[in-house]
Image (cartoon, rainbow, N blue to C red; front, side, top):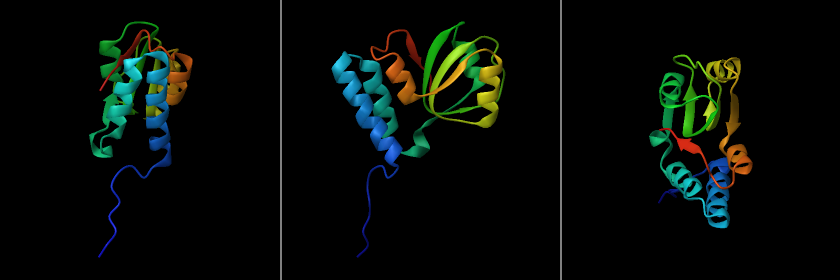
Length: 122
């Protein structure tokens, strides 16, 4: 009989989910609860978002959260604060070159606990 482990095994993911749920309850911010629920899904269903999509759906100096990985395909033509679970090297370079910033989801939640003016892109 084999032991099958169900659930997340990455300690960063489990800590992130519990932290986001706590922030959502403390600050009455449903956006962090929604991100936590996305992160509870299997890794194969996590978002992979290209910079071209972020460029299309954001305005200058907006804040965006990606519950997954940001990839470097496309261009970013305005500064945007992007919070994501992970970034490709090309995406980080292009975001900082455009004047934006790359943050982890944890940093984004700590910076804006109420979740005001933060957009989810999947």
